[in-house]
Image (cartoon, rainbow, N blue to C red; front, side, top):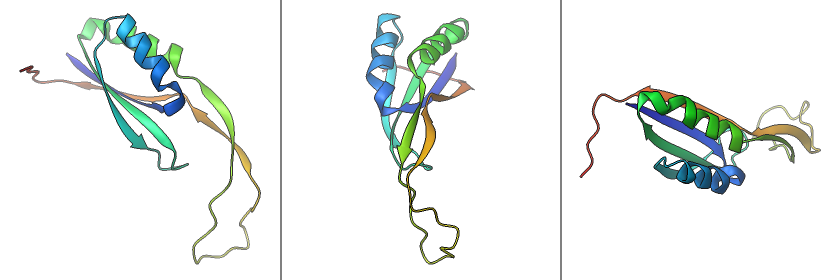
Amino acid sequence: MKLIMAVIQDKDSTRLSDALMKANFRATKLSSTGGFLKSGNTTFLIGVDEGAVDEAMAIIKDNCHSREQIVAPISPMGGNADSYVPYPVEVQVGGATVFVLPVEQFEQF
């Protein structure tokens, strides 16, 4: 058995959840916050048999897309402000960061 931990952007959360349920995968959704843009993410915990990992990964890949987003940079706190750029910049966000971990024991009560 494997545990898939997928950190995705909130915008993709409902679409991924629906696709996982349609394929009969059970998942737990956790609210999380990204460290880079400090924006909302959703972390999915998905327990799967080893033979179903590729199918679950394909569903994640098909439903979590990267996109360009304009963000306002955070001003420096106390440091040198000479290199601070005060106008918005375009960054790539979204997609999925996925970890596949071995599960030594699984119990359901």
